[in-house]
Image 1 (cartoon, protein in one colour):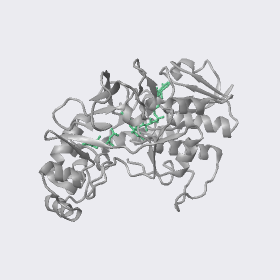
Image 2 (spheres, helix red, strand yellow):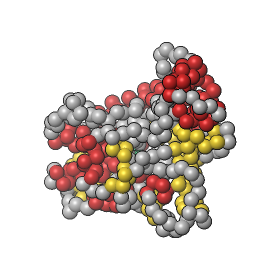
Image 3 (spheres, rainbow, N blue to C red):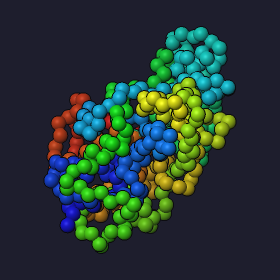
Image 4 (spheres, helix red, strand yellow):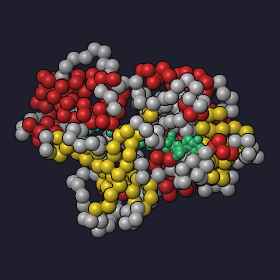
Length: 387
Ligand code: FAD
Ligand code: UDP
């Protein structure tokens, strides 16, 4: 008899399995329908021997010391600050839009003070700021919105930014300085030996058993367990009885190129002309040295593995109905990006999983960063939920 069945071996499932076994002394069965652990953060060596992320680039960043310290038990880190360029008007310029973006795009040499004035002169007031279009147009005006955000968002989400919650494009700031890092979090690093190795170490506990290539429905009624941690899509758990929750998918086209370097930045975004949204060159992320280089193109689509919840009011409304059902299902804990329908980064999922563990064990934690961390608050302190 297992104490817990954990459905999904991604961040949500692996953190809970590790805590339940190593801290709680529970017997845990982890199942995943894929043939590997790590969920969407899975990485592996491709045929050329280059470490790649099968499901697109995963860059670790967090402001939460608790999350960073927790993961540090299972991996060493390689310091890494992510940088992205956007292909706009035939140039590769920094995104998030910063002082250099404007100067390079328009052939100017504005100062920080002048670019602030420039943004103010082109920005269109929006009150309230409700949609993803409002966020950008009210910060940098219509022209920059159209160059950098409109096309990219329409491709990525299959809908116009005006149809998406503000939280989506609000993930990308605007800067008047020359900081060209994609993130400004306190902790920014990549697992030294990759994500998969880190997951293997989390799950390598004598009271954790892992079954891959297994949908949990295949073992329901066959293997006994007391409680469930569910990290798959929440609508699927309830047989989509309230209707299907939309998740956006991607097709990944991986390639290895016969040259040591392919592009001048780790990620190049293509807002406009191309059918793909971005191209990632993995060696920048991992620091690996190799005479060849591997890249991945991302093509957004509707059908396929569920990668992104789609943040908009009508979906939030449908999710609330599933959440009410989840709350009324005793003995099943819903955790993670798919099961709580939240556009969470990895660190937010780890924080959420640690909070759920606290809740399961009734533990109370001291405040982090001066804020009170309520065990019942799903997104842990210092980790901002984006939805
Ligand atoms: P998942 O990783 O999706 O794991 C859920 C697991 O459950 C899956 O392995 C699935 O196979 C399994 N499962 C589902 N249903 C069943 C079932 N019925 N039976 C058995 N198993 C089942 N975050 C960052 O912080 N930085 C980034 O740079 C970043 N980049 C990203 C890029 C892309 C393209 C994507 C899609 C996401 C990115 N993320 C990034 C987000 C990150 O992937 C997620 O926050 C995190 O992986 C979510 O973990 P999870 O455990 O909730 O879900
Ligand atoms: N975005 C955009 N242009 C860019 C980068 C981002 O329009 O060059 C928008 C787009 O809607 C995207 C969202 O901002 O989905 C969030 O970007 P982020 O890089 O956080 O996306 P993720 O890495 O989660 O795919």
